[in-house]
Length: 437
Image 1 (cartoon, helix red, strand yellow):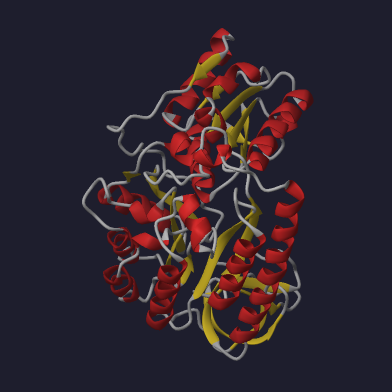
Image 2 (spheres, rainbow, N blue to C red):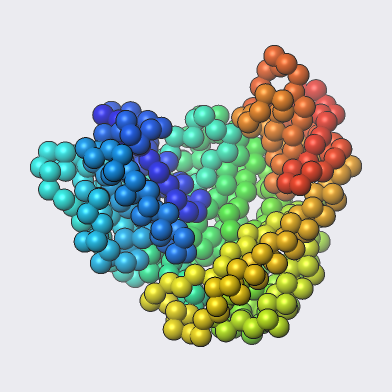
């Protein structure tokens, strides 16, 4: 039987989809890239914004229309955060949440046999532990996302994720070590550790995120270790010292900001001030001189005035981010912010555009600053026959002109000098002829 997977949202969702894929293939299913040709369609949904909800549900309806005989599974954060939605999506044969993903395969087999619709959405409890999943199949890739943390204890006023993911839970280090070894044996060169609230890794097991990084760095065959999105208030001086001790650690820091205005940060229930954030960035840049600092910034949070937004905009310029993910505030029912005075949609849009223009300007300046520098670049699969492409440790995309019939450089590391910057990448030239660094 053929199975098609569609994943929306964050890197954690991508990891979980890869894990489900490995589970299904190990039981004889064949992966297809066409939902129309699939016997089973699995949709891993995202609910972080209203756009995430609509994209997931739109794909579900389209999948049913184009393939009426397929077994369709609708799983992930949307049904977990709003379990009552299960009865409102008749297009799905099986509806599950984010808990007990290990039962999805058995539910599919059960539905194929009995044809009875299945709804399996279980509430999280404080006693839940990290759910062990099958190591995903990243054999065709250079980089692999590895989920090591789930859940969030923060309950920011705008965010539904604690309700969709439960409380913080961490992957045991021995399980992580075994998984990373398997990935290394399959040719993976770079690991990206991801989680719902990654800096809370180990809060339930007595460890720190640096412990997980060190485990990965000690695995033969792994050349690089990156981190996913980080909460700034949880990063200590000791964490930075430990991370800087490994030459495999990649100095790319995605520090979720949300707003550069203290009044807005307080209303959001964020656990830091703009000045504390700025102080952390200075420490990071002192410890990692060639690092990149990226972030998320929200436009139009309830109660945000024009003055508040301008303060946030100026703060973004002050930091000088390498990249900013700009998004408009989205009402999430069940959160505190949903009942606050809302900013008109046209205002949210205008502010998002203005912040995006600033983001583009900052990214251009950051890339221009990379010109003349020399970095080791890990090359990945080429998207164009005209270029080899890969990433520096600080996650700058670098392209190298390719000669016709030249072999792929995928999974090789070469030192590259940056010679020119473009809008969202840099051009470079290889300055060594060996991948041994």
